[in-house]
Structures are given as structure tokens and as C-alpha cells.
Amino acid sequence: MTPQTKKIVLLPGDGIGPEIVRVAVRVLQDCAAEFGHRFEFAEYLFGGCAIDAAGAPLPEETLAACRAADAILLGAVGGSRWDALPVGRRPESGLLALRKELDLYINLRPIELRASLQSLSPLRPERAKDVHIDIIRELAGDIYFGEHRTEGTGSAERATDQAAYTTGEIERISHYAFRRAEARTGRLASVDKANVLATSQLWRRTVTRLAAAYPRVRLEHLYVDNAAMQLVLAPAQFDVILTSNLFGDILSDLGAALVGSIGLIPSMSCGPGPSLYEPIHGSAPSLAGKDVACPVGQILSASMMLRESFGLAREAEWIESAVDRLFSRGIRTADIAGPGATTVGCSEFGERLHAEMLGALDHRQSV
Ligand code: IPM
Ligand code: MG
Image 1 (cartoon, rainbow, N blue to C red):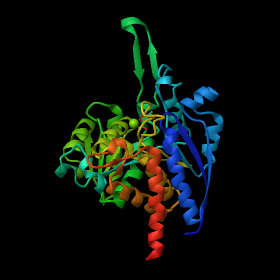
Image 2: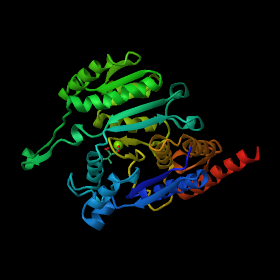
Image 3: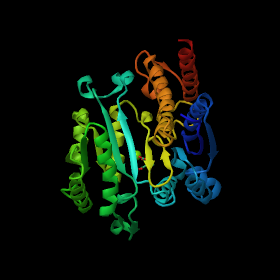
Image 4: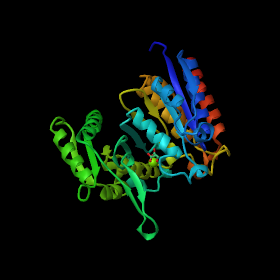
């Protein structure tokens, strides 16, 4: 693989965001040094800290830098400090605006129970076996982006959130999901609420129509309430799950709980331009500044970036295998500690990972 030069925009954001992004950047620097790549990092204000410093959660300068990047690595946004702000002016609105502006309509959230963390699943061992689900969440439409309105007063005060999908929006995310299922075991579960919602009826009709073009994929449809139950009762039945924005938000947290901790799950968001990588958890204000957060979701987001945006599979593998070896030796952050583990903080996990990665190279060179 020839050395690559890449511009990576960093959006550490709020809460634990800056701590975990720092660890992931170190890992990327190790990769660059070891494999001869040149990663140029540029950090920008985003989320609550951007509201405080620049008056808006997604400043123009930040958006322009994201558009010009090869990839974006995001920590997390939000915190109680900005909780009183209305919908539309909160840190989270910056995240939604970024997704919309870059047209990041594909969101991939891999839910994998790592062998070394099997005992952490809240499920009985026979149910927790073989969980490796790709949740594909539509990310640029649905109730997230419809009009949000509050009117009236007193007991007549009324709030409305509008949900909408066009056929085209459903088609483009479905094509991605069918192709992903084709490349895996060929099972695709589309999740909706077509017994109640018009958007879901359009969703189901559209996905069903497209299935004809993918004869190797076995498509099934589930209502979201049933899907939540099935994920807990028999998660191994799922391979690729395709769902809308709101249902994907909810089911991906459920999936994260099944595999040990929400701190472990990375994500990729793609559209026509640069892709964005972020852990699926929030800014965890109660952990911020204490150096106890789990940086693994962020680290795996960085390795996903190497693999998916830059085609650097060997580098991604180098990182992921080192994470697994630390886990097997019981090196864990507090959220995934478990009996007999050595509990370390966020930055110490980063230090140990750095040593483990370089140690693996020494080992390779000496054999
Ligand atoms: C996620 C988060 C966001 C979402 C929040 C922070 C707006 O929960 O990425 O899952 O709801 O999409
Ligand atoms: Mg969420």
C-alpha cells in the first residue's frame, strides 16, 4: 500500500469528547508513523463549546473545513449546561445540521460481541452467542428533520413533530443495505411501524419493490416493537438491519447494551462527500474531566475511518487486534471492568494500547 496524505478534521465537542478524541488521534499518529502515511489533523469548534465561543453549534468555518476534509472524526456533543436551550439551538442541532449539510444519509453501526467481552453481555451466554449485526440507520430524514413546533398555552399548549420520507430517500439507503447484506450472509431485516405510520408504509412498499433487484438477499420485515423484543430474545437471527432515523437511534443503543457497553460502538456516516466517524454514545457529562471514559468506541471509529474512507485495512486490523489483546488480558475501563479485570482510565488505556501496538510490531520483526 502506498503512503497516503489525508486531511482529517477533528470535532472533539463536549463532555468526554476531547478526552477520547485525544486517545484516538494518538492511535492514528502511531499508524501514520508506522506505515509512512501523512495525516494532517485540524481541530474545529463544534457543539456546546462552539455555542459558547462562537454563538452557534456549527460555525461556518467548521462546516467549510468539514466539506474540504478527507474524513471527519467527531467525539460527542451536548451537556446540561445547554439543556435549557430550545430545540434548534442546542449542541445536538449542530450535529443534525452537519449530517444534513453533508447529506450523510447512511449511518452504519456495527454491533459486535467481542469474544473477550462475552461475559459482559446482560444476555444468557446461549443467547449472546454470534452477535454481529450491522445496523444501517437512515440519517438525513424522518422526524429528526421535520418541523418541530410548540403553540398555545396552559393545558392547550401543543407540540408537533413532523415525520416525512420520500421514496427517493428510502431507495438510496435501501440500496446500500441490500448491497451490504449481499456482501455478508444475505439476510436483511427492514424495521418499521407500518401498522401505524404512513412513512413506514411507504418505507415497506419501497424496500419490498427494490428486493427484486437483489435475488440473493433474504428480506424480512419487522415492526419496531417486535424488533426490539427479538434483539433481546434472539439477536443472532439478525445480520443486517435497515431502519429509519428514529428507530435506528433507539435500536442501536439497545444493541450496544447487548454487547457490553455503549462505550464500545463506533459508527460511520456517509453521503456524497467526506464521511464522518463518531462513537454512538453521548458526551457523558458526569464522566467528563475524570479520565475514566471508555475511548474504545472512538478508537474503533478511527479504525473504521482507515478501513472505509482510506482503504487501509491492514492499519485498521493492527489497531483492532491490539484492542482485543488488551481486553483479553483484562485491561478495561470502568464501564466494562468485570471480575478480575485491571481497571484503567481513559488516557492509561491509550498508553497501554500504544505500547501493545508497537509491541506487536517488535514481535513481527523478531520472528
Ligand atoms: C446518536 C445520538 C444523536 C441522535 C443525538 C446526540 C442527537 O443519540 O447519534 O445516536 O439522536 O442521532
Ligand atoms: Mg443515539
